[in-house]
Image 1: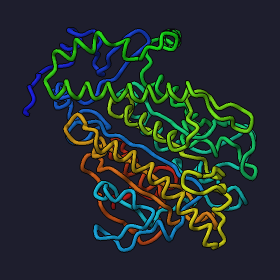
Image 2 (image 1 turned 180 degrees about the vertical axis):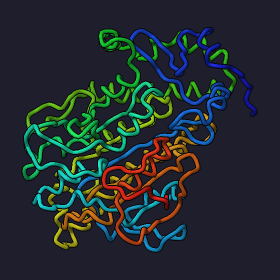
Image 3 (image 1 turned 90 degrees about the vertical axis):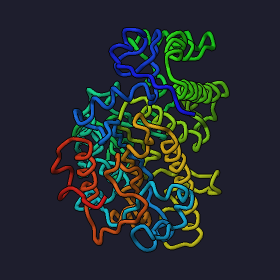
Image 4 (image 1 turned 90 degrees about the horizontal axis):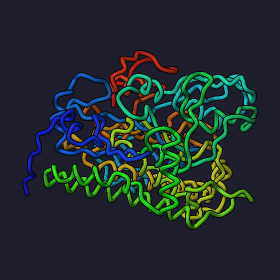
Length: 466
């Protein structure tokens, strides 16, 4: 059925509905629920094409996200056979087969600054530290940490005025900013992907409830706290606080937009209910210490909730930049859900043992299943220009170790999903034919994002084959 057209400009909409501002939020006390891509916003979108950074050719927002996997992979199960569009996926990528045309696999990237050099042991700390910075971490367990700004923060600095949140930093681990972790390296290197400056990591959030409140809370800290307290005490949803404005807006939208708004608000409520269920059930103890509220005991559910948050953040244009540490390098988490009871780090030193290699392959595939969930959510969410969120995104998935047994930092496992609004070729395996700094990819991404960058980290130029 053809939709009704609703020609509107945002300033006029703001006058009619005070709860809808120029950044498209429905507001209530201590609450700001961002709106999804609606046809009603497309005239305003077209008027802004080519005027601001972090947009595609259509004028839709361009997003970037980085997801980190630890401890290397089973290389023989990961590596594709052949190159170009006719390549054969390795067994690890089986979950991604339905999305074959939406991503590309790279061979030939390296992170030299994650290698030992003259610093000795500490590959796991260096891997985490180098992944988004391309810089060598100063070997210290004290307060004199030194690294470099990360690619996501370069982008965030350039477009922080465009969105409510400059960037979103997530983790499925605890938060550590001090102490000694890996062979004399500060825990700050190993538990943070994103760095504001050479000496300041961006502390990631691991609690889905806290992320939800950050995305949808509004007003002063006091108002946000009071809003949450009211909702918790009265068992009300965040949506109850913006119900009046939502109904008013709904009446003035075309049929397609009405359906989109209904589906979106239902989706927000479903995520809110998932978090409430976790909080109500309580959590299993972690060596005698109860986990914080809002963090699922099931690792897979935790990852998917965080991925849901990233999708919500992108679809409401709350931010265009995200990083997610699925687990810190050196993590010894077990994966009973994947049939692996041993610790990941322990078996990553496989020494060629077939049983350990088979278990690593199971873990790799388990992580790939979670990434597939994220890609599918982005692919099936329509953006403001009628394309998908995935089409208008640049999503990097991978790590800074290839073979965990050797702690090798060349030929890294790297996937790039999304077409960057039509700028990236997908559906292929790209063999770079040598070892190139992963930072070269980041220079290209920054340039597409609108930050005219020539050098970043240890780059030698912008990667052309993307």
